[in-house]
Length: 188
Image (cartoon, rainbow, N blue to C red; front, side, top):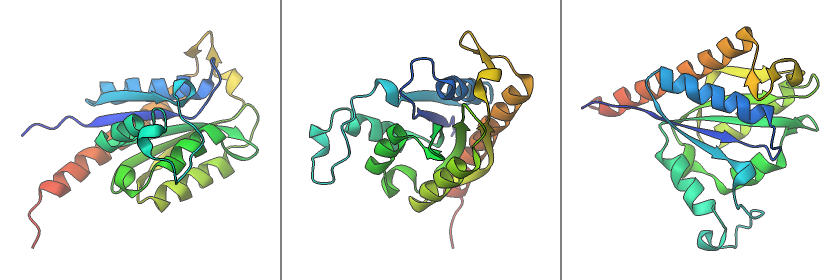
């Protein structure tokens, strides 16, 4: 049986000219070059009300459809801009909807983009909360400091950053293949 992994990118930014979105799009293009199918969830365009655990998903805008897309993923690349040394409220709200069903044993790559210099704390926060829902967070991660230096006119212009995003995409695609092989192995 042939297996083509599905890599879903999640952009946790509201800004129309988001560098985070551009980085996630680059990573998804790299995942396609590595042999994956891709899907991009742009939370800036989603109808996603503030998470309320008492609200039925059917009454929560796009939530149910977005969760189905993440559940279908063999790997996920999440990206957030840095807001106050953590990830964005846009991503946090979506992440509150998610749980074990969406992420257990799913390889996840992390991308944080900062207008200034802080990326370590948001990457740590993403890693901890993704592991909290049993995601398999890959070792590769991409933090972009002073993002305006690396993008121009809607395009990534830095070869080193492009390579780091390519490596992240390859890592999640490779991990998706490993998980698929592990699932096929007979267990004693």
